[in-house]
Amino acid sequence: MSGTTATESAGTDTTATEPTGTDTTATESTGTDTTATSGTATETTTGTTTQTTATTTAADGNDAATDGSTTNETAGAGSEGDRAANEQAVRDGLAGSGLSDEQVDGVASALAASGLSTDERSAITDALAGDGLTDEARGAVADAIAGGLSDDELVALSEALDDGVLTNAERETLGFLDLAPDDAAYYQVDLVTGEPIEELRSDEGYYTPDRLLRFAHGDTDDGVTRVSDGEFVENDSVAERIESEDITVENGTATVTVSVSEGEPVDLTLASYEKVGPGWSPETEAKQTFVDSETRTLASGTHTFTVDLPDGADGSAA
Image: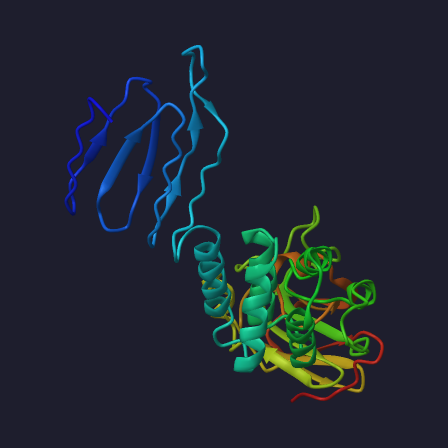
């Protein structure tokens, strides 16, 4: 070609020019940039990284019209790179979940290959790694994901697990889970100052740190599974005057014994609630159902409170 200058060396720009003024750029992974211009040229180069643009110049000299496509197929980047990053993020999120290596591998691979958003994947992995699922539910969810679910089913699963638990209604809706209904009754019992709150997280609010003295969580299968460690109320004047024993559960009731030192009378309440499942979060607390409470104004001395638990919650303390 007359009027064309070409120079090639590793790491050196090479420019070839013909009168039509249309550019087609091809880049090779060797570090050499090559620019070739031709009236109809399509320049394709091969290497680890290939980016190709094919253009054709209109005969009348107007702007170039693109009749090719641009592809970016870099090893370890693009969609493959995103999938690898997503898979690793799921693995990291499931660390310490108690799932087997095989289950973690299956969940990570399936979620990374799905069309779920980052938030939807996180809802699933956070629930699998949290304490809101029973071991049975955790394993069943992991096995279902690894076994192959459609994106619609995965989206429904992420929505159900957004609060970290699976209610019986959600279990029924997610019919693709090999999971028997959870017949256990889950409960929370709170020893607090003042009056009880019947609708937690509603306009009535919730038990703030200056009111909550002691709590216990449990279920009919395992009895009491989680308790507070002594009085942790942030109201020093209350903490200095009140001592309480662990909340105990027996025959469908919860009981606590409280000792109050000399001073002004104090209002205390023991309240019980039915939970939608194991674990606790502000979201699941709002779904709790009030069961029973006892409120008393106490002078100095030792006093005992007793409240009913949800039907079927007759296990003793673990």
